[in-house]
Length: 525
Image (cartoon, rainbow, N blue to C red; front, side, top):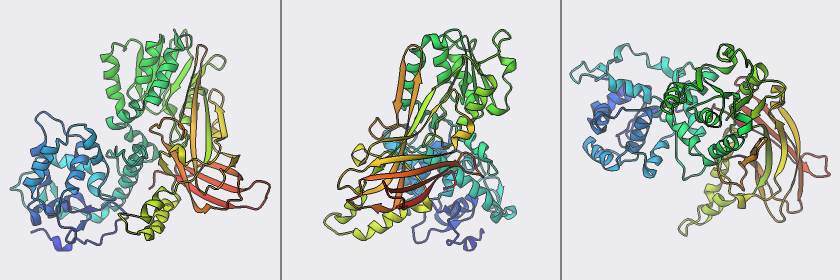
């Protein structure tokens, strides 16, 4: 018999925790591995997750990571101690495999740091292994529990959890009603670039970006409505993804388009290009831009790139730090005299926010005073000094929108992506400021037309949302109307894809510091 008594429910949840899917809350144990949790649920509650998933999967449907994510969250949303048959019936009734608005909520984790979600890849491997129910009880799904050193997986789980949390944040628009979540499996020893590129190897993140019409339509219009920029030109698409920008360029008349991406999506992009009869124009290369030699792919008569197109923007514009890769490609391959980056202009903005919506909610909940919750709300907002990525409604803005940084992308240098800049805000009379918010604008200034889009609070929301910086103490002095400050944005020394934001602010005309605070845009959440 498996020694279920040795599995502690007090295991630290600083890493991913494998909590029983079916046990009543008070009895639910937390395990150190997926296999241990599956085995205990099967032994104590006659709940076999592998057979359940097999039984609800439609014929000829290939199980994917996202299917497992939705099923796990759906099960966790069911009443405790539900039988396997009742859960099976509920899943079939829900039609969980269909991409419907109602099913989207099951991308959002029900349980924080849920190890089942982090290790969905391992779960799918166990299902594929078609474990024999007559195997020795010490062998579960082809994994020998007697030889399994559970504690040795702690570091692996920590790395997976960090990567999964980063991707969950990346695919959540920031609104409470948008629960799109993507947490693909990642190598436990992944370095910064590995988990970054692996995250873009799954379909869901590309769907999120493609259905962001502000983003995609701006690229389409800027390319197709500037035909003289692309006609008979050599185009490089850095981070090509599904190849959509490469195909826009080909449609605009480009002589040759080279797309580069270091994620698994490149395999599917090649099929997409072929299916649209563009293989003669578009060449797709798998690899990291800095490591690739494009020379063999460029015509001898035209050894330089005319246009570099890329969708490199992240939260607060620079998070994920893809722009240095684009700059590297520009400096190595773009025609220094006539070449152009697409987009070619960008700027960043800061505004003051007054958002007391949450506080007001707790003051009267069905005629009960729950004001004591407000302190918790404040602590959660300031957890680990993390910047929040969410859509901020325009009516929460109480100041001017100040441009604190801009760049001409055809000439900007890598060292200019770490900077310190001054700003000045005029606060609306009688308003309490409790946050700053950052957003950015993008411009495609071409020979035939100008196309622009904004991620500002006053514009149509995008998948970038805005970057919200909650203050430790609200600025409540009604006499304070003019605020000046210094904003610093710097890449993290250990992970160049992360950014640290520091703001120091004061009353205009007063040299004394009113406040200073730091926030992180980090994958290590």
